[in-house]
Image (cartoon, rainbow, N blue to C red; front, side, top):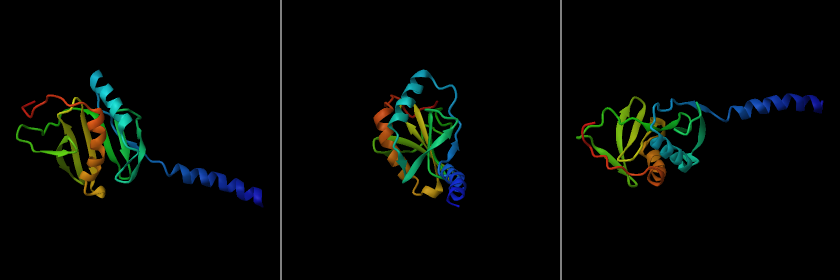
Length: 156
């Protein structure tokens, strides 16, 4: 009886533990210039293990340009394009020495760095309100590994 129970338990444990790790589908930015790609690789190495109390998740496809935490996922993409909605009159939010352009989405917010040599965007679902909390935690990694640029709020 004991052997039969163990044989049945092993596949069950594999099923339970495989459900603990979530893979988040995140489209990496395309056509990232080599300088920004290296900055993003450095940034990936500086990211925290947890954000908003949530463990990191694997992204699919795997990339040094993307990261995710929690479910629903807080998602980071590094090396993105300058936001189309960013204009000279846009208001920025400064968090721990990092300027962010904030856009409200259906069900959350999109935060994109400004004044850095690579644009980093963070999508935070409403489930993690106040959404700025996740950005506060990620700002340290940006400040540490994404150098400032001389970019000014002017027309693209």
